[in-house]
Image 1 (spheres, rainbow, N blue to C red):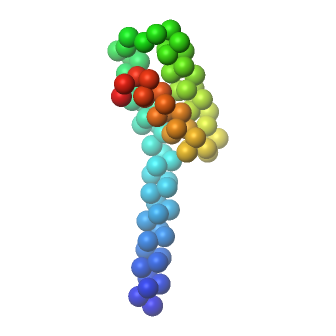
Image 2: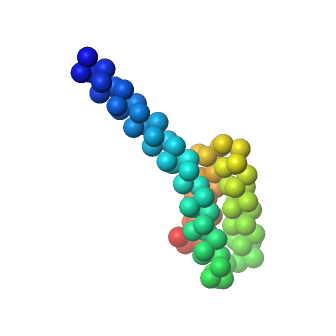
Image 3: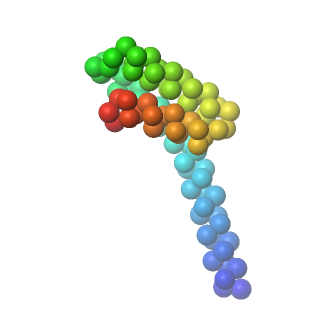
Length: 82
């Protein structure tokens, strides 16, 4: 019985962390938007890539594809140096 209780609690924590991760996309987008508002020095190619990654991530987030959205946001943040 005790093992079952630990399994249920552990499973609930894993599910909750997945939801928390999925809902972090907007926070990551806000961080990118804030950095872009400071007019960082980027090559025109990098600026276009960041904008495309940011837009793509928003669409992926809306489609429920959070892992892919977070990857696109991570790539954009890397280009921005954040």
